Image 1 (tube, rainbow, N blue to C red):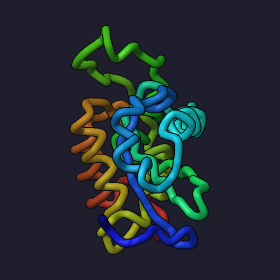
Image 2 (cartoon, helix red, strand yellow):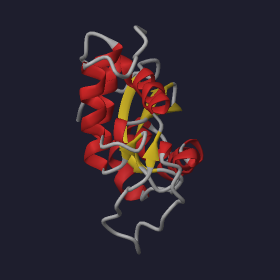
Image 3 (cartoon, rainbow, N blue to C red):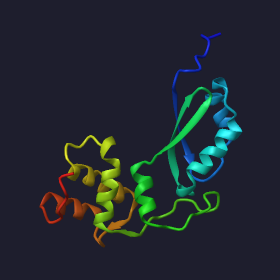
Image 4 (tube, rainbow, N blue to C red):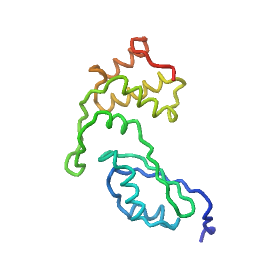
Length: 165
């Protein structure tokens, strides 16, 4: 058997969950059971914390200290872009392979880039904006009524102004 669990130690666990839904306790149990937490209670807490992200796959970070779990949501770029489209929540068991054909204003893409800035490898905010535009392209939506790749070229040619930070 492994070493005794230190209650003052901080354990960080990351999960991919569907927002607003109580995940299967069976998938949580092997990860958080040894830490002395109830998978059912943690599943309900995760569902409560991700209620803004209904129907979207999202990463959740659990910080466990003294058998207390603190939940924080770490949204991915694609989740932020899909949320910006303001689509109605869908039933993921019935509706498959959805096409996201909405339109996002460029200012909204800059806001998303600011949120994702700390996770980006780009040197400047304009690089992060281009990363988010690439995500929008892969999702299949438009930005300011144009194809996202055309907007990326516009950022390169200074047709779109991106703030320095």
